[in-house]
Amino acid sequence: MIIQPKTRGFICTTAHPEGCARQIQEQIDFVKAQKKLTGPVNVLVIGASTGYGLASRITAAFGAGANTIGVFFDKAAEGARTASAGWYNSAAFEQAAAQQGLKSHSIVGDAFSDAIKTKTIDLIKAEYGTVDLVVYSVASPRRTHPVTGETFSSVIKPVGTAYTNKTMNFHTGEVSTVTIEPATEDEVRQTIAVMGGEDWGMWIDQLQEAGVLADGATTVAYSYIGPKITHPIYRDGTIGQAKNDLEQTAIALNEKLNAKGGRAFVSVNKALVTQSSSAIPVVPLYISALYKVMKEKELHENCIQQMYRLFSDHLYNGGEAAADGSHLIRIDDWEMREDVQIEVMRRWSELETGNVPELADLEGYREDFFHLFGFQTEGVDYEADTDPAVEIPNQV
Image (cartoon, rainbow, N blue to C red; front, side, top):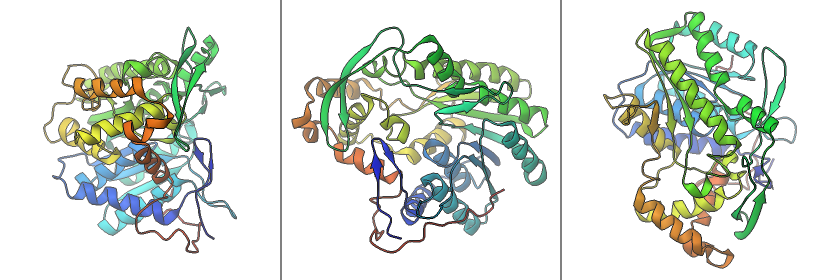
């Protein structure tokens, strides 16, 4: 079939297997061109098929020669429907790992469930013994609690008062004003239940109880803080409440792991184009302006560059994990540089539909968005007949 992008708002409902595979190879090539990492050895990535989780798996495998297990919830192709991008990404990763002689397995299912946790633990016991790095990078709009059975849904809303600011339709470049009404107390509760730290804590507890978490193990989850302009909808909103819970979980996990030389961190990462960030009002316009400024200052990093810097400068190679002594690793340091933020805010005050191409990197945003789904990739013939059915090697 001929696979072209089909979008609905901030969602792309198709994905291209060859485009995804080429982008995975580009990330692998980048990591292999860098200085070799000193660790880890056996890595579990929960949420391993896209974004920071995928980049973490690639960095560990091809930067340190690590064995990896990826857990993710993606769908295979069915009839005329393509597989999800994460499915194609994971298939390409597994193929490349096998060619490199790296041990890896992929587990497809609901990471929030006890069944997938048990399946993962059984695999570790059978094939790996223990894991010494656990990356938690789950992004989901819903979660069913494994104990109570309650299903929670997350929302992207401010807390306390309504929020009004500029936003942008990144498909058209139109800048408009948006007002978001505040969340209810129950919406805040449910968002924390989905995106907070409870499930991360459950994973670590069950891995420890099963004896498959190595002494001295590291675990890291991912977060975002961002500038004041996005705080009402992000850091001070429902998502931010969940991220606060995630950071508190890191402190609790660090205390547990310290007894055997382990450690837990939250890495605060740079703003990047993801399907999740594209859904947040205000954020696409901010990211577009940020990209323009950071590229002009030669500070821009993509996802794989961020994760390699996290591993090489902070988690391994003798780097200092959290410079401020907290459990937060600030990989957003270049984004939050004073000169960068001053210039972004100057442009923000002037941004309107007519000057978006001049003041912001709209084309870069669009390109990154379509890259998420394997489109607009150099060297791919998107008019060619393509089989959407792709198997994931080493799927458990």
